[in-house]
Image 1 (spheres, rainbow, N blue to C red):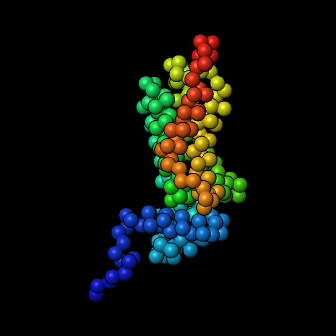
Image 2 (image 1 turned 135 degrees about the horizontal axis):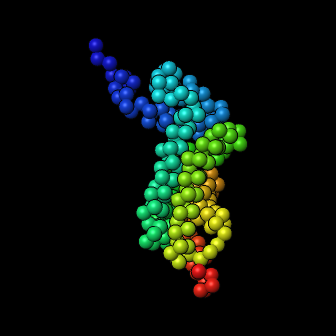
Image 3 (image 1 turned 60 degrees about the horizontal axis):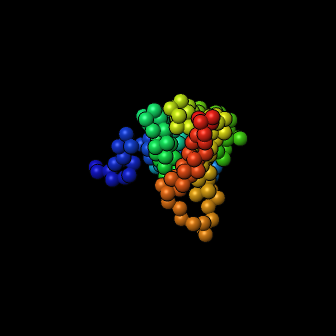
Length: 214
């Protein structure tokens, strides 16, 4: 007998991604707190037990979604910082900002980070996971860039925390303004062009102003 159902055709190695796709849809529609594993299983075309073979809880699903999106962005920022900070920290920062703004302007990529930001107050464990896995990795990448640029004379001495916020803030703001708070009449901004403009503002503020500031 030939079985032609979607479930029968599905390869086992495809199931985690299909479950995560279903989870993101359910989380986005119902909110993380109200979502149930049964709902996700039904959306994925699987039994509840089959879902638990791959993910032990809906918390694990959201963490996996964060790894796929913001986690990868943080890792890429870290790599770009380590590769480019010594030779050209300005170029490295521009590359990081352009990569982050372009990725986070995509609603599909920013969906999981936005879910965590929205639910962080109610689910502190998820907030702590996001802080360690994404925010702290990004902060370390930017701190390395700033400190190396300062040591090489590319950047002047500024308050570390203020510089970190100036580096990281634009990516978070763009993510929220291009998705959650977007209005129909908002201008269409190219993320790459926006990144270049923001980089000019931030980097000009970091450049030495005189021999005493360097």
